[in-house]
Length: 527
Image (cartoon, rainbow, N blue to C red):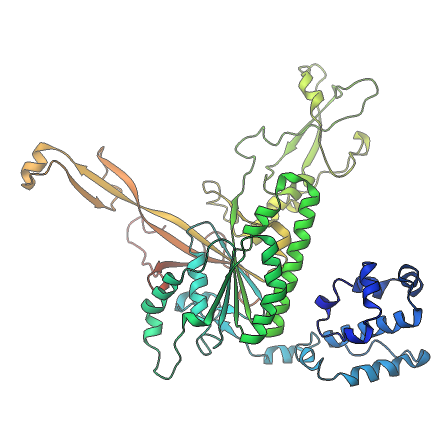
């Protein structure tokens, strides 16, 4: 049974050592044992039905104990209920830890549970996150290159070592898929952050020795480390934070989009398994899992009205031309980065005059390729509403495209790994950066040099007033402004559309620093 150790890590496999090899050879999963008929399992495995029945009952009882829903029932046939009770009583220690994290809890018990967070060491950022990054969940930090994802993660590696309420007093585990841990930058944050300078002498200071790091250059090594080595290290060292930087690198290299739908299906299965593994670690050990994710450009066909044109193929006996009485057109932009959106394209039928221009020969060669059979024209289904299209829905869970006033002139991004990975995480934090422009004035006039008393051939001055502009003024990128936006989270409401409610921060020598900007009195006050 390939997934028994993952579903029930504490299951007593030694009692059923004679059955499990045969069941694993026939590729029977836990779901198969609980749903298939007993006779069907016996035919496939050639095992005694009584032994198979005992195994199925033991798995069912262990699942009930894991979920905290009690016994399976009061079936007294052949004393099965008594056997289940005796089996559960014989192993109280193995299921004691599972019962403490039972899913069957009242509202009062959930509110009474201690709430642990890891601080970012900045008051404004912590306020937006309701204290910091929570434990027991998977939190994703996404953004383009240079937005500050790595700086965010490095700060958490140090703050998790602080005692509550700023940390957990536990070490951290850093797993990198691209580059090794930057210990030089980590030492700089530890030395320059003002919070560490204010610590009492009795408070233990974070150390680089309590940050365990490893590199997984490919998906095979990443899978082996996360499945076998990470759980052992978490239990042995009492890890409080697992950082995966980044989650998309190895999957992008292993699974290519152009290789077909089967490859994407395999990638989706791997992402679901990764999400299950990380959630189990976070829940069982009450630790925080933070992953960094890359982004990709989101292209729409709104800029090119011909990019999304579509002409369904019509079956005509002896005639490959579409009828002269109908024409087909596509409505609404469809994203090239959204494979699901291509199945919800709106196709409307509009009658046109028969004396219109004759269709060209290339129109007969346009064929729509779809995974579903093409309906006949008379059985055409109604157009799918635009509200159900993925392009319309993804603005609320990707972090880009929800601002009706800015997304027309900004480059839209989409977090990597698509909708499947989005369903595996509990919180998504998007980081943005935009250039702050200044003005450079080049004074190269003989009279100006004589008045200033300078002898140099050129005098360069920079300033920020964009209204005093002449032909010698040129813009330049003065600095970068960065914002943090909460897209969705279980413990704090998301921010508004665009950058409304987002927290502006800077990357300084000591890590992250919130920015409080005062509004200017002129019309350039709003950014």
